[in-house]
Amino acid sequence: MSDRRMAVGNYRNDFLKEVEANVEDGEWVKMCMQCGVCAGSCPLGPYWEHPPQEIFMMIRAGLRDDVLSSESMWMCTSCYNCIVRCPRELPITHIMHGLANYAHRLGLAPKMNPTRRFAKLFWNNIAAGGRANELKLSLGLYFMDGFATGIKKSLQMLPIGLGMLKTRRLNPFGLLAGGNCKDRKGIQAMLKKAKELEDKRKGFA
Amino acid sequence: MTKQYSFYPGCSSETKASAVNYMTSVNAMCKTLGIALNEIPDWNCCGASIGYAEGGELPRHAMNARNIALSEKHNPGQDIVATCAACWLGAKETQRCLQHSRRLLDDTKTALSEAGLGKDYKGEVPIRHMVEVLIEDIGYEALAKPVVKPLTDIKIAGYVGCQTNRPFGVAGESFENPKYLDKLVETVGGEPAKKYDQKVTCCGGALAFSEPEKSQAQIRKIVESAYDHGAEMIVTPCPVCQMNVEIYQDQINARYGTKFHMPVTYYSQLMTVAYGGTAKQAGLDGNIIRAEKLEKIAAKPAK
Ligand code: SF4
Ligand code: SF4
View (tube, each protein chain N blue to C red):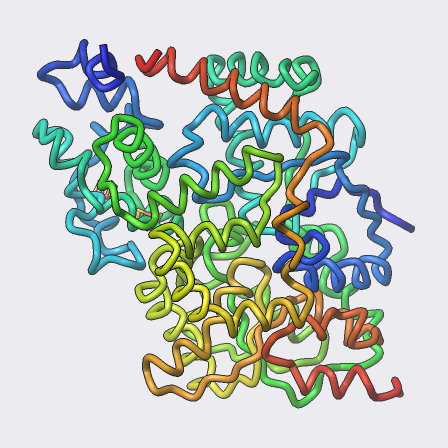
């Protein structure tokens, strides 16, 4: 059975239950009283098709596909404005991250969303050696859409890159070294185990 | 007397990484203040705010728990102190989540044992940001004592940003209008731009990479307001804020026809200069937009 069908199996008609079981801090969603405070809190607000308040309403209305395929959660900058303002103290930031992660995991998240792709690149970058390698990360980002676009984007970013190089804030040899912990093997095993446990818990394994 | 802390520097502070000059100035500042930073051996990345999408919940907690366990094992009895907002936040969030969920705690420990640390996580150590150490353990008065070159005649906008401020923040400060950066500026003899109204505006964080246009609209507001309030430079406690607000100014100028050229410094750079450190010790050679007024003060002999 595909990942997707396994995770959904038990919740056929109840998206709220599915969110409560499988999404980080999902059990909080039902506490939302629709006051709208969070809707005005996101820095990239104009680009949210559905602000958090609406997402919570849609979850309760069972609009599964609309929620999980939305670009909205991917506009979250992790600014934590919403969390400190919500009268019901919902961990909104974490729920947005959790929904994005769940949608991504199910393969329902928008394929081309740049933040989804960057986030994936970032995690793979740190999971490899335990620490971030900033050169590989930025090159990976610019070359995400293929070689030609990569060259174009790198050229656009060249003045900034040179500025960082000149001030010794970027390692030109980062492609060869850097970003490694001594116990990278242990870290990799730890992450593998953590993923295994989480997948089992969330019905992916 | 020297105070001992277990130090979590984070990825951006490594040699030849984006915030290496933050680290340089923190070292100089701590030396003056008698703060000893004992690096957590073999620390790893916190997962940053963007790690969630691919990393999920438990793997992220495992990353942070590993750092906490290493600290509790190798630097027992010492508070963890982080200089990066995201590192501080990530570690603190993990500690809280594991306190509140037995299941997460057990799973995290199972994962940690793969890295040989299954028995080392206690999650009891206080996790603090460097500015908390300055304000709470040292105090403004003692921070003013070593000042030999007051930063007179510089007006500075204190840009606090998001993650040093929310959701945890610094005790006694409000989320909408925290004042500690202004107080730190005054402590070293500078003039804070007290009415600076974008001090807690989000710079876009990691989305400055993935959604550059949308984030640069935010950054534009942050820099413009500093100009509007007569500031000559911005000061911040966060390496992500520092980088985002500094390095995109040329692209913003090209897009919006603005003429921004606003230095963006760390509090530790201001303090190092005020304490008589050289431009190099303050990491001023690491600023892409040079903080010329600070460099001048650093070059002058102390009175
Ligand atoms: S601020 Fe809280 S209670 Fe109000 S709509 Fe948002 S999540 Fe719901
Ligand atoms: S943390 Fe995310 S959801 Fe909350 S206000 Fe900021 S952008 Fe919006």
